[in-house]
Amino acid sequence: MKKLFTFSVLAVAALAGANAADFPVKDKPITIVVPFAAGGPTDRVARDLAEAMRKPLGANVVVENVAGAGGTIGANKVAKAPQDGHTVLLHHIGMATSPALYRKMPYNTTDDFEYLGMVNDVPMTLIGRPTLPANNYKELAVWIEQNKGKINLGNAGLGAASHLCGLMFQSAIKTDMTTVPYKGTAPAMNDLMGGQIDLLCDQTTNTSAQIEGKSVKGFAVTTMKRLTTPALKGLPTLDESGLKGFEVTIWHGMYAPKGTPTEVVNKINAALKTALKDPEFIKKQQALGAVVVTDKRSDMAEHKKFVTAEIAKWGPIIQAAGVYAD
Ligand code: ASP
Image (cartoon, rainbow, N blue to C red; front, side):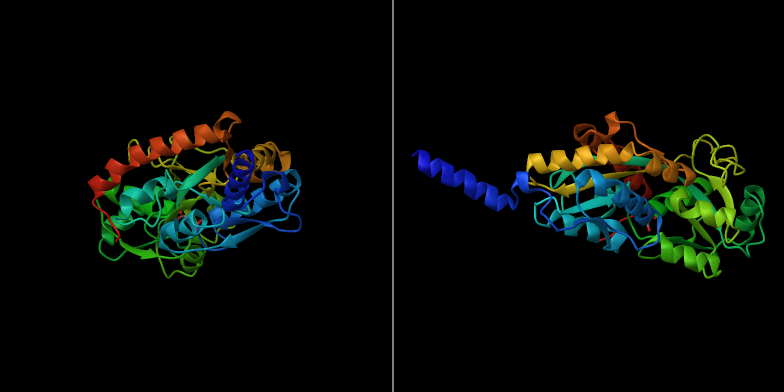
């Protein structure tokens, strides 16, 4: 009887695909899947985080971009990945908005993942192509009024943060624009700089340097207070620009496939917590306008509680906007 019990414990451990004591497996990298194109804002956070997590994990940490469908393709890949801790997901607010945006989801956001902890909060900015005739938000509002029906607004697909921010903006100014979806805001940014699209709403982790370098025009930030980051401190809030109560802040969190052994999940969470206290990581994030979360918010239970609340918050807002994808 005893023998049988031992056997079944081993069998379960084998099925789970990992022996926690052996994690990370020697010479095997840990892959952070980013569900958007390389060179964009989520990718930026993931690459800085990968660097900061290498030492505490004692493993090489690499980033893989699995872009498309507003982040749901990459998230699905991780939901179905081996439960050995070697494949994790870094995703943003899209984790909480996609359940309301997609009629059919390939995974269940709440049930199919282990929540490994929150990472940061990132404001967004409303930016325009460099050739746009407006030079501040007031002039932009006039230009939008004069060009109704002709304006192109880029985003990273249904469920992306840029999509959500764009939806909120169009609704706030009661103007529909032609939305142009990309596999991430890195390619959208390229097209904005080249003048193929007019406007983009994107995280400061992608826009700070471009605004500062004047390769795009920065019009406003989406926080209730102005930002203090040198690259962004001159920008007004949308709220003070007349769109009362306009606020959207993006957060990032890390996830593993459901069923990843508790000890493995705990090890990743501990490494994440160490990375979030790394002065170099904090400095890099600050320079991009992002705020690293407090220790409590990087607790796994807090993370799940927060995302559950975000799903409940955004669901009715998205349903009221009447936007869906199949
Ligand atoms: N964060 C971007 C968005 O949601 C996508 C990206 O990272 O490229 O719009």
